[in-house]
Length: 184
Image (tube, rainbow, N blue to C red; front, side, top):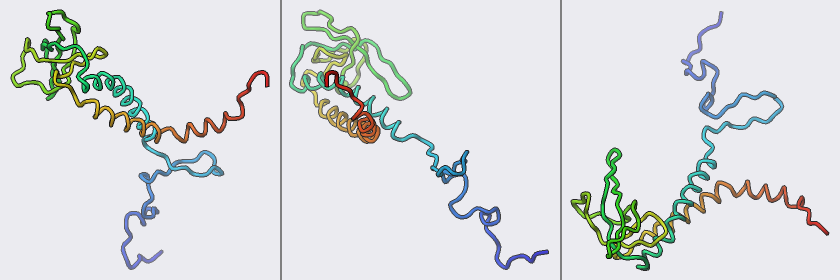
């Protein structure tokens, strides 16, 4: 029979785990004991950053040219007329149509990319500028949205680079000498 120790053991010591050990430190079970142990990651962070960056790049690129044209006051002048209001939780989005001064409807479903005036209701008319390439209608005074989209493009390119530069470099390194040029 063994004598009890003079000092009480912690729960980790009593169950044979040292500090920092356990199921939350990234330990994995190995099939082959000769293989080196790799810590298990819970989230593939580079994959998530790459996917989000690609989505941001596409979204920002689609709206960059129309926003740039609006910043230069280039486009068709007219009015955006509010038609329907869609609310999700606490955010509401107005959909409307863009009408030229002659009364011709150019876009039947467009969103206004500016500050909405107070008291907007169906039928409210706001002076607007349609740049021709997207379903966005900008304020008639122009827009600085292109600056925000420029930052979004820069961040998305940096995110894509961070998420994929090692993979691309390895791919190029592996396939560098396998290209066969006919006739040489």
